[in-house]
Length: 465
Image 1 (spheres, helix red, strand yellow):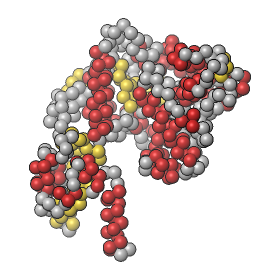
Image 2: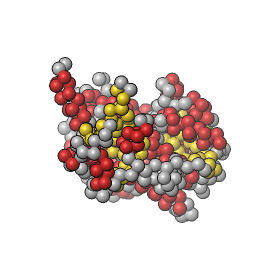
Image 3: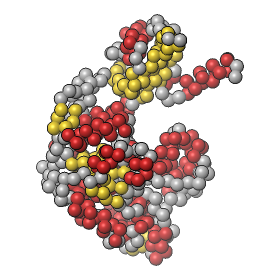
Image 4: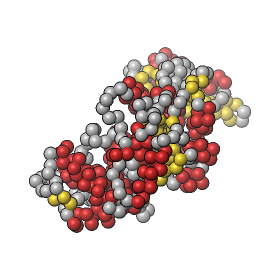
């Protein structure tokens, strides 16, 4: 490939990626400053390129610049969280990797790759605040969560899971729960907590797949002012859950390095905030869940063996809905009763063909998908009293605009359920439109192929291609 073509291709790549790219030469002058970082920092590229970086610093008021730090000490800084004000005075959060570029033993400059985490950081802070508020309401006489009486089912498969779960509520041992997406892992976890001696103490749930490692560590273990740029003194979820229970959802998505820190907390009963030196004692019962078979995550190296055996003191496997026989109809009738009240309907029964349609469906989204199916089907009904097979709305996205109406009931479902339902629906629709071509579906959704494949695995979406 000719050099000019090669350079043009590299330039196109740099300007098209989502990550910010900033390169300064050994004199501290900016040579590369791509569109992503310019949008993030609200800077005009002509005000940055070919100018000393210290001049830009005066405009943007960035403290402890990692670019200049690496330029001085020639040492790589990986996954560094930075919070600073952009040109417009808006606080932004980035995760940066800053690398010295050395050619023939001579430093020629420093490259920094920045990922915008502003919205995620804001969300993580809101989550912490909301959970603090929830913990402060423990003396509220209203019911805080689910218990075993809320779990509907008469099949042998679910009875076996409930028997083990009820025994688990009588001890403080760590619990590992395996079940496909939508089987009710959090419902079981809450039931264990609210049937235990810790029932009057906090129950806090955190999805381990929701945040990158550098932010998740601060959420779980807390931060100390000065621990990283913009950090403040804040307790983590383990401190907030003291004397209670913490649910670590999708533990198989937790980075291995963070798993090692979690193992230390479980073994020693202490947490250390990010950037801190003080060990803080905590008494927390841990329940972990996975939507992948534990044998698979062990063999694939997604979970440390020592952590796995530390968590797997009590093991509970929740059966998928398709293996629960008549529970499908029991649950459907329960959801009809629930949404009759909310939607002011008067649905009395399910037709025989409707029952057959429900029983024959694969239910890859399990109980969550069944509830959403009943809810969306009833939302489309007028004065009918029977839920028929024609009305039951099961994963038929093509040529049916009514299918794409999603009714949000904040009292009926927690936020992560709603987000998961919507995300799964859009993925299925994109795959339908692309004729199951994952690459094309990823383009429709604005995702990279690897990210879509991860989400398909997360929601147990199986396609031919």
